[in-house]
Amino acid sequence: MEIALDASMPTYSGGLGVLAGDTLRAAADLALPVVAITLVHRKGYFRQHLDANGRQTESPSDWSPAGRLEAVEARAWVNVEGRPVELRGWRFQVRGVTGHEVPVYLLDTSLPSNDEYDQTLTDSLYGGDARYRLCQEVVLGIGGIAMLRALGHADFHTYHMNEGHSSLLTLALLQEHASLHDRGSVIEADVDDVRRKCVFTTHTPVDAGHDHFDADLVEKVLGKERTGILARLTQARSGIFDLTHLAMFFCRSANGVSIRHAHVSRRMFPERPISAITNGVHAVTWTAAPFARLYDRHVPHWRRDNRYLRQASAIPREDIRAAHAEAKANLLEDVQRRTGHTLKPDVMTIGFARRATGYKRIDFIFSNKDRLRRIIDRCGPIQLVYAGKAHARDSVGKAGIEHIFAVSAALKGVLPVFYLEDYDMSLASLIVAGVDLWLNNPVKPLEASGTSGMKAALNGVPSLSILDGWWIEGWIEGVTGWAIGDGAEEPGDSTKELDSLYDKLEHIILPMFYQQPRAYLGVMRSAISHNGSFFNAQRMVSQYLRTVYEPGMALPEAEVLQ
Ligand SMILES: *Cc1c(COP(=O)(O)O)cnc(C)c1O
Image (cartoon, rainbow, N blue to C red):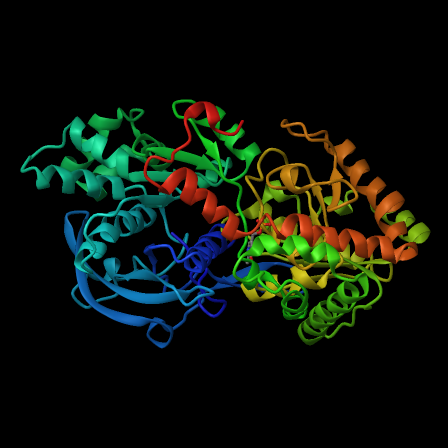
């Protein structure tokens, strides 16, 4: 449903879209024969505005597809609510390190032949009501297959449903297979064929991430016949259509995005084996220029094969210090430009930037302001840089942002806090590279993977994080960063987690940062060599290739990582 292709195109909302883009960038690096489908999102997600009290308002993020994308001639049609809707496509070529290109087709219904409502279907990402969302999912899944055929792509070896949003493509494949065999109705043999071809990745244990619709709405949008096929084959829970379950039902393989997340997902979907492929980020995209130059000098082949970043352990600490100072100066300059305030280059700067939503606990570090003051008095100053959008209808997320503004006013003169507006890929690049410590304190076990800490690691920025998602795998205490709380799967006791966060800052991190800068540089360097070399999208896509995409290479169930 979303792909972050370029910072100048607002076709994504957050981590899911960035991951989709990074996956395609790595597929291009590895010269894989891949084609991707998404929607054009003419009004983007939204532009975030914050007033002096941190109250968020939103405006459309209009952009011009014609200015950035190549129009394709092909047209396709899809039936929505009984009406034929015409689709056009725009092409974006993702270019890999060796020049291989992966085409992405962005579907667009804004054509004069469509009625007014249908023309808006590819406007807003995660906007509108349930009807709008379901119609978009028909365009994405069923329209996506129609567009691939119109472009001249015959069947594919594998269809990767990235999230349940695209899972109506299984319906298109079922009907295509049935009509290929001159059958008016869909039978078990068609189901087997679709299952052989489809793979599925689930990305979150949070309920809001899994679309479900009332059966009445589904019947209105899909029509009686198509709804009947799905209901009969999948024996859907009566009254509800769940797109994650649809994808699970029709795939030959399903995976979660970290080892812990796969484990949690198996409890949510006990009907299927779920393996784990831990996310990664596209190293060349997320490495800031000063570090890219450093790697070019010390790790010559890192762009072609990110695994060589392991050799970062031999880079002199002084070079790491200089590259980081430059990345930090770039961030501070941007903060100055945006806010008019000057941050200090030699003060411990903590970064926290991600979607503002309840479980991420944006204001957790401020839970005990007195303790925070004591820590600063004892150990030295801290400054904090925040960014992140709350979904327009997420009142808890929005209240979290307002709370940061209130705390910032209350701690004036003690702890400078800056909340930067309109978080996107380019702001993310600046913050993950420019801070000294990456803070992450979600409620367990809701962080499926998390990827911003991986981006930080590529720039030598260690994490202080709850043990959830990718951090369980990337964490080596005092070597790649520090843990908050323990590694149990259940939600932690938040008082204990808070104590742990403060204890680590007070007794380990701040003393090291201010009194043993050489040791801190050592942690920065091993964040790169241990985690940059592994939590990258080239490694992730290689694992998809070997365990999910390639014929006959699916892991037997017993081998699925536990
Ligand atoms: C990387 C990224 C995210 C994901 O951050 P998490 O730590 O995984 O929540 C969200 N938004 C943007 C703009 C990003 O670049």
